[in-house]
Image (cartoon, rainbow, N blue to C red; front, side, top):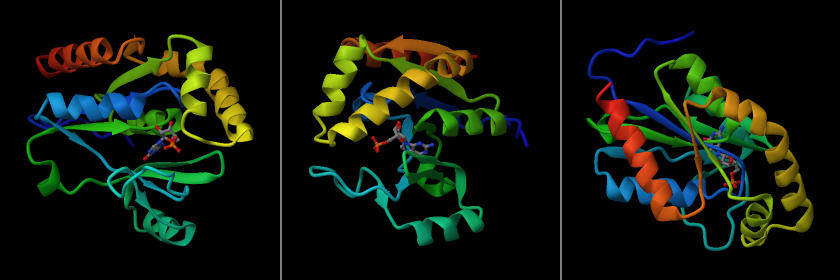
Length: 190
Ligand code: 5GP
């Protein structure tokens, strides 16, 4: 059911887009540059990659994830290429008076939009497929995972563009973050 935003409620900013587009780097830079933003930390059942820290996700197993679903503990959750990912219901004290940033894939983004029609949907695109593939390979995932992510990205792009309020091409990180900050500023003053 859609929940109307109450006056003074935080904005919900959804940053979505295909894997390898650089969403994680973008939102990290975004919250560093705008102290009025709070970045949600997702839960996942995927294995921790080398170099990832416990700040990147709450890494958990399927049984605990499913218990949390049953408790109504997620704003949205999905299964993405064999693993669960979900946005936990935020603790109001942790968020304070900041606006909330979610970095999630398309199915989750659509769930958030349904529940919070005022959410600002930003869909990020890679400058090219070749660059996206290069970024995906750079994470060290095996080739079949890279191929699966590329296929999924290509299939989902039209639906992502349809649900987006704003589309941004991530060619240069600094410019992309500037564009997102401008979108957020104008959404705040709406
Ligand atoms: P990765 O395994 O590369 O960290 O993430 C795979 C995909 O899951 C990415 O597109 C990422 O944005 C998305 N994702 C991360 N956290 C969440 C979440 O809480 N919910 C949903 N729906 N997707 C998420």
